[in-house]
Image (tube, rainbow, N blue to C red):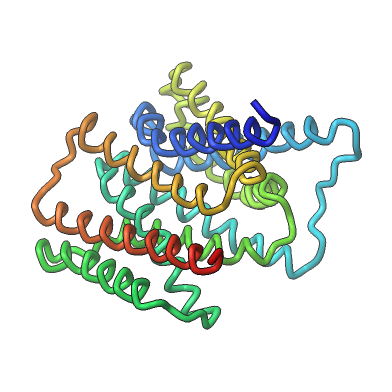
Length: 298
């Protein structure tokens, strides 16, 4: 196998593993059902920061590690992305523990469509006709549960909007993914420690309800957070962005399967219509990108 083909193969492999791990996360969070979502979130922030510190030290073992924020603007951007990150993680963990995995799947399916809309609203980008149709279909999909149940799908929309705005702001930061995540989690560590110290009595790790196995899972949240990101960062350098964009839909698809096949969440008629419209919007979105690239090549 040629070196280029080998790099492409491993790039695809790393991407698939990363998206599979992200899609399987509901199983991990469900295993800690005895913990409150805020305790899980606090541990995830703390141990992700610790893990990322060791990862960066190991990657730059022959060089001087740089743990600096370049300037004040970058600091405030990363502080904003850190708050968006904690919102995204917090709502996701809460939703999983309240049997709303399908809602989280819908949110991550909607992410690229929300990102397109932000490009129009914030960056002044223009939509193609197919992109307009995709956005309208996504809007109708959001309204279906509102009409059927009188409930706005706030979990899905919070996940989609927080992640899309997060991605938009991160584009302004001239730091690699690993260093940026280290800064974000480290900025949030004081809040994490404040919560954990204030709720020691009911903590699974050092409170009256100590459970060693759950405590180990909480400590491992650092690896659970870091490993997929590292694999993703490596994959980005080895494969085409278009292929990576297509593979990203593995994550919500796996979460969808976990919700329906493992946790038997109700897949009602209204949910079928909601997901059907989102899937159709995604197909139009992908087809528009494919058509645009073919025109450029031609």
